[in-house]
Image (cartoon, rainbow, N blue to C red; front, side, top):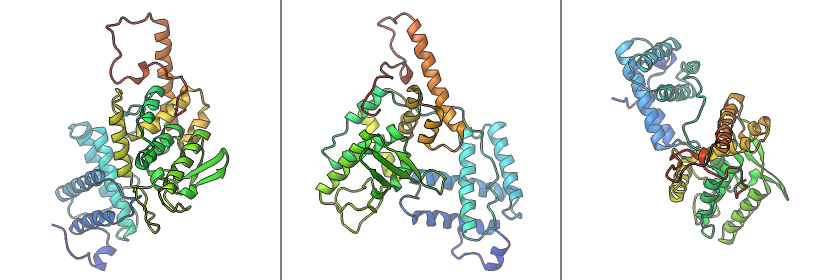
Length: 357
């Protein structure tokens, strides 16, 4: 049962003990609920992290209850997790990674609260980086079809259209777009950049916008202005509400943005499986490689720190080109032989220019 009072200063000076852990777990969840909209995780993600923290506390109770929360304890927990994953098949690789992510965030919170001097979970490595992505991606016809489903005479639809355009064309992340303001769009004419607060980086990064996307953003902002909003440089670039009060500058939350993208993908009734919001970002990288864009330019557009991440998309594009070459050498398939559901690489028109290119 969680304690109602914080641990005494004497106990805190010794680090986090098992008797105090319930309090600090509950405190972490409560503090997160009051965090800013742009920093707040979705309820589903937070519930998962809460479960993973509880799993660690249960293990701590059973295996070494007298030991304080130290790096040695964290390493012993990792050994147990790996055994449960690889030997007893209790966890999948993804679940193992989530276990570490959850307690690593909790450790960061404990350091911020000055309960611990250092995060004991910080140096524990998660599973090896995947060499592919499970989510699907959109071909050009799919992307054009998705964008054509938005009714831009309605402001919310207009906003969602701009969100998808920025993700499909420039590989923008949901979290980056949630934090962007009108003032982050800087420049004149067709020389306009959008400054984004990239994932895991303190320095903002500028993305050169294409003329078509610039036109779309200006049309959306003009739409908001026409409906009576006082659009200022500090206003959110992607407004979360339809009616505006001048003092209100609330940003759109990532959970809401993800929900809107999911609705748009469902409405488009695309046949490719595993399409999510991140699929739109992945599409930007894959289509750039299919257009034979140089590797360094794709890495810069996607704002990848590690080249290994960019190489995942390069490899996927190469695989698509190989399948296209085989199709070109193979006789036309019989009418009864249909395309395998969920394989966008077998769709025609990938290299044809479209709305989002």
